[in-house]
Each structure stands twice: as C-alpha cells, then as structure tokens.
Length: 250
Image 1 (cartoon, rainbow, N blue to C red):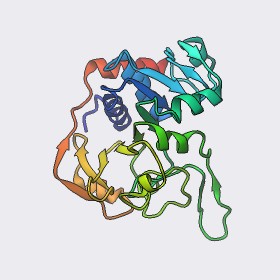
Image 2 (cartoon, rainbow, N blue to C red):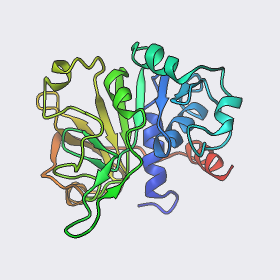
Image 3 (cartoon, rainbow, N blue to C red):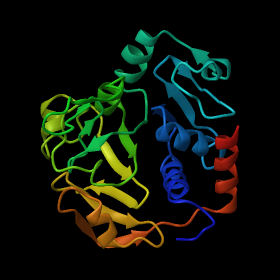
Image 4 (cartoon, rainbow, N blue to C red):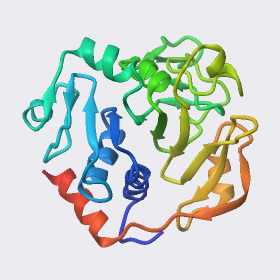
C-alpha cells in the first residue's frame, strides 16, 4: 500500500464517499462521525448531520468527542429534545442514512456493541451498549457501517445481538416491521462488503488498493463469498486527505 496514506485513512475516505448522495445522516460517534464530517467538508457540503443528543445540522470544526460534545450544539441549525429526535425524526422515517460502528458483525450485518465472551473462567467483556443504534438500523432509509477488518470483529456468531441488520436472512426485517432497508454497505480498512440481494449475506464487492481477496477472507470469521466481479476503490486524493487530516488535528 502507498505510504501516502494509511489503511485507516483509506477506510475513512471511502466511508465519506458513500455519503455523497445523502441528504440527512444520523451519525454514530467514532469512525462514523469521522466519515460523516469528512463527507460534509468534501463530497457533500449540504449534508445535514444529526446526532442522538438532539442536534440537527451540526458543523463541528473538529471531531466531536461524544454525542454530548458542546460544539455539536453550538454549530447546529437546531437543537431538539431527544424524545423528538427519536419519535419524530428517526422513527418517523425522516432520515436518509444511519452511520454505525460495531464491535462484532456477523455475515448478515447484525451488530454487537453490548458484551463479548472473553473465554472460560474470565468475566464477559462489557462494551458501550446499544445507544440509539437499534432504532437507527430499524428506521433510517439505509444503514452504512464502518469498522476495521479482523476475525475479532467479523465473526461467525456474534456474542449478543444488539442491533439487527438482516437477521438470519431475507424477510426478517419485513416480518419484524422494520421500515428501513437496513445495512447496505460495510466499509473496512481492507475493502467493502455489501449484502447479496438474494441471500442478504455480506459478500466482498470491492477491495482497497494493494489488498487481495485472500487477505480479506483471512480476516473474516466465516467463509466470505465474493461478488462475480470484485472492484478496486480509488485511492484518496490530496483534497480528501488534507480535509481528513485537518479534522483530526483540530
């Protein structure tokens, strides 16, 4: 891989590109927030960023530390009560894209952010929890996910289902009355996975420059399938890298 950018930067830039056509985005903290703020400063300056603390149209000059970061409210077009954010905006189907991270993901893009099994004789590992992710995944028009790719994160069976992606396959979301499409892409530091239209199982559709299919399969905890034609993402350009590094350095 070129020394001009890191695997994380490649992941974050591609995650930002995925928001090029969105109007509104419900943003999770961490990598999703990095990608969403990069998208707003590059590919989609009109993108309205919404955080579960109740801020609408936030324009932070640095990456927020949490959903309660004061700059989110100071730079927002409006701040509404959390109950309005969820009941009216989110559950009302008024948000185009939800952007989430995860600790564990399975082949159907179900998410665990609650607890992990640390092995015999060891207490379970506690994670940050659900936050608004279950409602985001249920009600946004579609969901994007971003996380680093390893067998620790991409597992055959998640230890706890915090947030439903595609359940156990086609039809589960409709059966449960979920209005949104659910996860449409999982962007990692190795490539991009998307659900197969027929099975809803994640398949490898794009590789990042310098990465091989074998590398991605070795970093996945199930037998990952590939699309008939696996594309290669474009490397970050100078404008994208400059904007990303400015955000991170602020």
